[in-house]
Amino acid sequence: MKTKEYTFFGGIHPRSYKELSNKYPIEEYLPKSQVIIPLQQHIGAPCIPLVKVNDYVKVGQKIGEANGFVSAPVHSSVSGKVVAIEDRPSPSGKLVKSIVIESDGEFNYDDNITPNEDINNMKPEEIRQIVREAGIVGMGGATFPTMVKLNPPSDKKIDIVILNGAECEPYLTADHRLMLEKPVDIVHGLLAIMKALGASKGYVGIEDNKQDAIKEIRKACKEYEGVEVAVLKTKYPQGSEKHIIKAITGREIPSGKLPADIGVAVDNVGTAFAIAEAIKYGKPLIERVVTVTGEGIMTPKNLRVKIGTPFRELIEYCGGFKGTPGKVISGGPMMGIAQYSIDVPVIKGTSGILVLPEDRIALKNPKSCIKCARCVDACPMNLLPLFISAYSLKNDFDKCKEYHAVDCIECGSCSYVCPSKRPLVESIRLAKGEILRKGRK
Image (cartoon, rainbow, N blue to C red; front, side, top):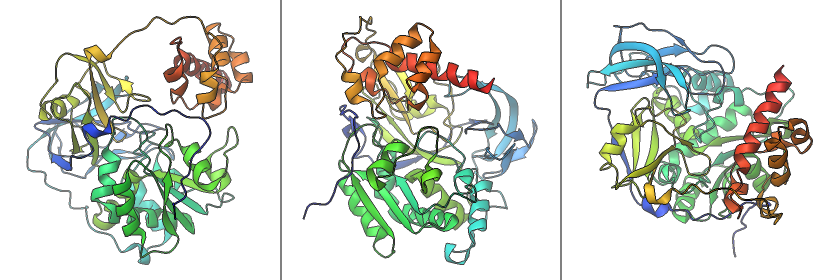
């Protein structure tokens, strides 16, 4: 009997290019010398530094304290001396106050890194506190502090937890490899999240182009009641929080609301793995899996790297550039951020480093909209991108608001299908920013 596959309205089917790296097991990479730890690697308030220049720090030592409820502490990923606390470029494209540490190459762990009890013997509040102290955030790229998700308002009852293993962005394979190599830990993290929230049902959503990962996660789920794999049809942006919820549960998040409002919590499989490590070993979020890939890389790889490792080192470790690089992107080609420097550090939300060669980068002059409505068919949010974009380009942001511009998830599906190569997602992003700025005023 054919297993049910879940999907959603709209979306696109770009070529995946995952074959470049999906067969390469995860390799551990240790930084050569310095790491750069930004004090803001998450949505919310930046951290307050707890160290000063010339201090000696150890692996896992807290070096930045969360400054507010929506925040997450940061920890040293190496042992060594603090050589600077200053503004440094971040993959976000901004200058961020960062702690620069010169590694001594010894990787001595902080004495406070000790294993915790089994989750069966832990209370929900204990799990939440471990997650907060470990500085765990959403590792699919959104970087929302996980502690906040695990502590919803008292009137929001969460009954379903979904682990997002869709990894729908082309090129990226970090989550795929993690599910293949660490399925038991991922399910362990899912169970911890469910206990912290009091949820009775858990799903791991995986696209059907990852049959090997589906098999491994199903094996890991077998001995537990209430957890299972939900097989998703391969389509972009299947990994969007709203769409994976709609596909698996049938529930729809109303405009302006959050998953908690409909009784659901969504976390990335990498986040679940980090939670498992924090509980089992007391290990804070000091490393993550990163896919270094693209036709512009000599040897694509999946690497487990320390937070703060410069992009440049990882590119060199993968054999360097293949030909002349046209663009280096933090993340995937659809929603990633193009970098102006490769001396930026890996942060908690860095899922991939994508290098596209010069001959793959084509700047096309936009033409007039031909009203073909392809963007309307592709929009997974049921919006009218052509109209929102047109009003945005005329600076009529009130009209953009009428067309629900703030509901756009900036997935880029509209721009991908547009035959006239209109700047749809860019202009809609501008409109969203103006609407939100006006709202804050």
